[in-house]
Image 1 (cartoon, rainbow, N blue to C red):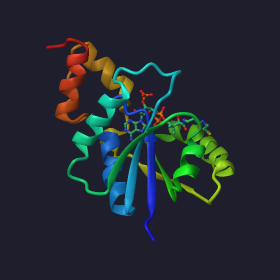
Image 2 (cartoon, protein in one colour):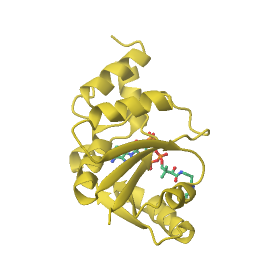
Image 3 (spheres, rainbow, N blue to C red):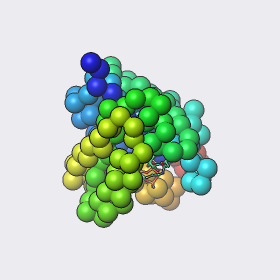
Image 4 (tube, rainbow, N blue to C red):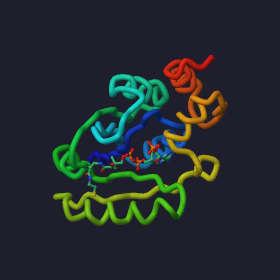
Length: 162
Ligand code: COA
């Protein structure tokens, strides 16, 4: 039986923290889908096509990764695609409160006993978020080692930063 995992998020853009979670999940499950949420209430810098190709670029060495996008309720998407597991990354204790609420609500909504699995973020990535990366790049700061080189280039280009 193939064990299917979902790692969902905005990935606007994907960071090394996200990639670390994807790499670790890809060793644990047969197939990992990176699900890009199209969230109308969160203004995105990159459109879904751009985010898809960025994720494709940084995960190209992993052979069990799929990339998809969805809108609306996460649990509906999970049920429709019969994921066994939903992966979440925990960066700090502050993530925990929100994550446990979401996991418990989702557990009611999943219809085949899908589990939420938390992976602890490596300390070197525990302070980053996509918004922070965007702000630093926009203001001309460097984010070496926090996003893939290609993602850094594309983010600079979006902000017209040399
Ligand atoms: N490394 C780096 N950054 C990380 C990270 C990691 N390991 N884990 C999380 N982050 C950052 C993300 O970059 C993101 O930063 P941003 O807010 O600056 O963009 C932030 O933490 C939040 O990430 P995440 O928790 O993945 O939120 P999200 O908005 O990207 O997506 C969903 C989370 C998709 C799971 C959630 O929004 C969802 O379920 N939406 C569907 C609606 C729904 O079903 N609602 C009911 C829920 S019970």
